[in-house]
Length: 99
Image (cartoon, rainbow, N blue to C red; front, side, top):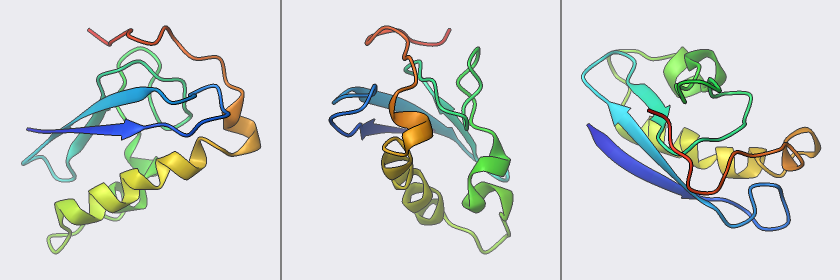
């Protein structure tokens, strides 16, 4: 299992929060799950599991895919947090985590 984090952008409802992730391998594609609760269209609100269809690196996974592909794709979420439809989404408490 890999552990990762995202520092969210300022001036959004995510405003400078620190989001933890877990990435479980060797499932193919890897299972990506937010540990810290978040309200984004790509993540299940009750479990934090990321919908594979929402990340091209998971959706288009092949035997030649790498964790670097997944990490690069996750990095793109930071910019998605600034989109008008996402930047004002109500967020769970700052330190809330999924079970």
